[in-house]
Length: 312
Image (tube, rainbow, N blue to C red):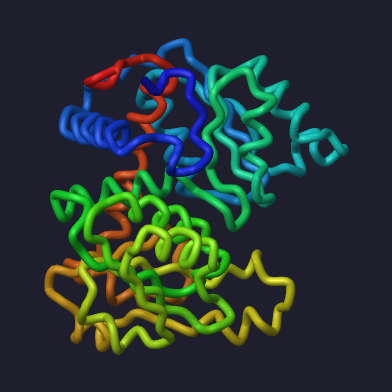
């Protein structure tokens, strides 16, 4: 049962609970009027201490489509945190007004801290380079919709794998599914942290490869998860400029890829996917963004207790 639960990292829900969420999201997609007024009278607090477009707007769209309402801020400068208010006090305040809190914060572990002070469910919308569980649910739903199942495939992650919380969350989640092989493509400075490779993949005996060249492995992949090099995570502007165009996916590179390849990206895109790729039938990143709204609708109605999942 998900009612009243926090979602801080992908492992907070069992595979069975996630499967039920995916099934609910698929029904919401297929039946546009389903659950349309199920959150009437409910309030969702959106506390974004860091910029966001898709995550914030998809949560807002999800709540509005369910008949609920939203309040909050998209700029910490317009909140009392600019005056020095602690995260604990901000969360206590928001919990006194809303039925659930969605929070993005640049500090790793901030969502976990918030969950300890909130009297309502807290959903992590990204905490620094740590986790982004609702993006992971989005990614898994996209894979499920386009491949009809999750598991028994090879996925490549390309770009900023050191700071990319979407990569960390997805790799951790996919480690729970059968026969998933992972390929990590990055420059040495942006390699996947050892807590993912050694701490999870080696421990679970999951096959993985680390390489610096996309061209040599693209033909092996069933899914390619592109990421941008994140300027906001760098302390040194020179390092960012040197690394920002390390990998650019374009039409010539895709000639070596499988016809069945799924191209994913959590967005925003900068220069790592050429605009010409948008017309390729293998490009799925805008579908992925839309699936994000459906899975967040399923998550909200479940956490708020507006509907019970099968098996609850």
